Length: 139
Image (cartoon, rainbow, N blue to C red; front, top):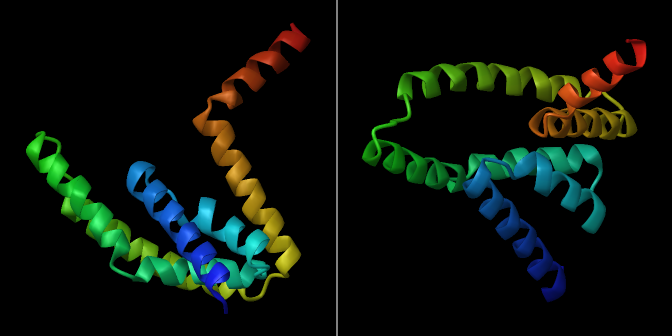
């Protein structure tokens, strides 16, 4: 691995870290596609690598900033909720990882794309616009 590849990997990580800290995304939306397209990883390699990054204290540092902000502004993060979500996340991660290893790489890409597309449609409220459009056709 040469210097250009090192710089590319660090740049991808930096972008994912900034976006993760800024809006709570990174692994799935930045790392996985970047690893697939720039480093030619398989979908399984990219998703596994993204999960590996989440194990590092990077996520904790982003969380800590939000925790301090919430404490200072009277909107604290409920650590009980974090703990309960973590229990489900651990179990879900184990089950999801086992399931992913049984799914073909091309199907994994399609599932990943559908999840991203669905998320984008919901966040942009395009689902409501689509429903209104369909209703206008039949009215």
